[in-house]
Length: 327
Image 1 (cartoon, rainbow, N blue to C red):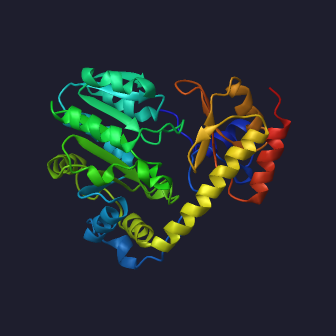
Image 2: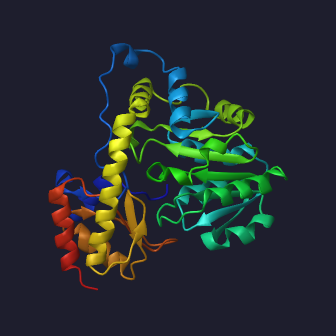
C-alpha cells in the first residue's frame, strides 16, 4: 500500500512518544470535525441499505444532478479504472498518488503530467485525472477550463475525473453541478471539510449510466448504517457548514502567515499549506522530535504539508518548533 498521512501509530512507534502526546498535522483534515449524532439501536442492527435521503442531501450540498455514495472516494479511485478498456491516461502531478497507482494497475498507459502541461496533453489522452484543489500542493484549475476539457474528451468517449476532496472551502472551483454532461466524473468526500474521515463516506457524481456500472461493481452495503446517519446529519446542517467555512478560512490564513513569519513561502487551501522544502527529511524529523507529525513527501511533490493545529496549545507548539528550525 502507498503511504498516507494520519499514520500516527507509526509515528509513536518510530519516535518512542506516547500516541496521545502528538499533534497530528499530517492529514489535512478539519481538526474540529462534525459531532456525530446519537444513533438508534436499529442503525447498528439492520443491514445498511442506502437511505434515499443521503443522496438527496448530498445532491443538494454538492449541486450534483446524479450521484452515488461510496465507501470513501478511495473506493471509486480503485474501481473506475476497471470500467474502461485499456486507455491512454494522464494524471496531473504531483498529486494524490492513489490515482496514478490504480490506473497503472489495470492495463492503462498511464503517465503523470505537471499541472501546467495538462492543456497540451489533452489531445493525446483518453482519460485525464486531477485533484482540484490539488493534494498536496493546492494548485487549482478554473472550472471553465475543466468543463472545456471534459467536453473535448467526451467527443471521443473519454473521461475527465476531478477529485474535489478539498473543494468545500472554495466552492467556486467545483464542477459537480455540471457532472451530468458526458465524460465528466466528480469525486467528493465528507472526510476533509467535515472532519469525518473515519466514517468512510464519499460520493461520485456523473451520468446515471456510468453510476449504474460503478454501483454494480461496488456491490451492496457499501456504506455502514451509522456512517450514513452521520453523513446525513452533517450534509443537512447548513448553519454548521457556514460557521465552519468562516473558521477554516481564518485558520488557513493564520497558518500561511505563521509560516511566512518563519521565512516559509507556502501555498495550499484553507485546510493545509504545502511548500517544496529543500531539507524536507530534516524538517520532518525536527518536527517529529517535538511531537508534531507533518506529512513528508519524498517523491513527486518533494516537500512538506501541514494541516491546521487543533487548539491554541498546538499553535504555540508549532510556532516554537518553527522558531527552532534552522535551515
